[in-house]
Length: 490
Image 1: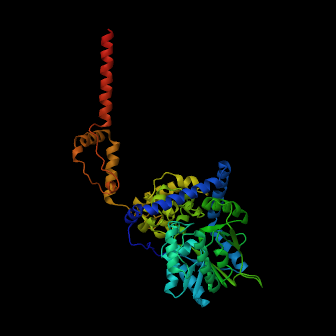
Image 2: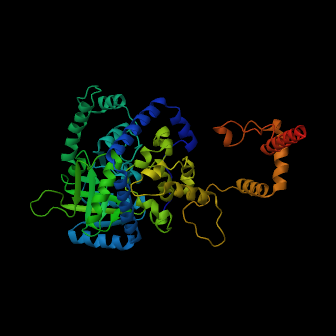
Image 3: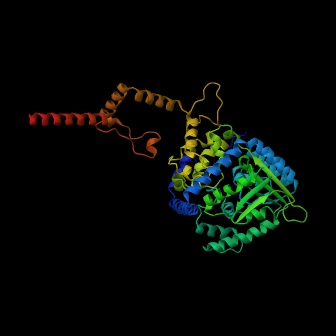
């Protein structure tokens, strides 16, 4: 499995500093996240029912993951029986090549795309452009970002960081007969007019998948704009791309997951469109003549192999954890430098990209637990973040197999020695007392710069008197007071 490095010019610290110093970006995200949190809260008014539904959703996903290899085989067999062609891809490169092979087989020059985070993960657009195939994003947010040549900053609303003024300027510059306007409805209509042409002229349609039902061989897509329905029916060929973890066992498992997904993501009881695709066109019916499914691993089998890490794959991509995360709200999505930002990205991306490329993400959290409290399928994100932090600094024992690529990426001998010294110091009362006394007496020598710590904080300086000293003096004063009172009473 090939290593992948996120495509960005700045390091994590530089991206964080850049976005923290962007007042407009922080205002946009603060307002957007407040709105999304309110929408979710108003959708789940009965907490008892919500917790019951979350427990059910978590059990459905855990059951599916516990049977993942068998369910994938069942899904493949049922899809083939229904006439859908199944392709397996171990890496991003293999997935992209599979899509290219299908497109070239049909002589395709254009592709219309419904929303697909997996295609963002594999950087499919860039790959196809180099091969002479022009992909057009049909999801409104993705279309905006394609015109702006930017990456998504949110997994449900990819262009949430853009203001209407910025979008108005973008459309004026890139769309025919579109004058500058800040009227949102007018902007949407201008984009729709252009996209309608693309739907009718595209050689191939490509979408993501929200769920795959092994029992029926059905691909389920949820959306609000209709672009997914058009991309899967107007072109003669439909390609669906998704990760192997999206499979569920029974059709009866779908309704509770849909309820959790839509209410958690956008505060809707259900999305405008729920598409269930089980076969290509039959006879004179509408729809594509061919349907292909590309199933991507790209590192997903790594967390699957570890019982605790496997919980990462329960995710249904609702983004509730991002909407409630104080760190993501302040930074936005681009600071993370990966396809999947926020809390879920911080536990998923290390498996997809390796810890060398993502070693800072598990630490990009306050561990406040808000993400875990709102996750509709009860992923213990803070626990998994702590586990990844541990794996990032832990040195493997002899003959021990790593549980993640890039294991120990943050391990240093200096840090190991520092923590070893700390352990000895705090486990020995005599050493601790000596250290505390020395720190108090030599407090004036405290350096003003301490690597890492003082990048964002003031330098810690020992107090002029230690707590032990203060307590000892207090007790001494109390004892003297009692003795004085006793002497006076005599």
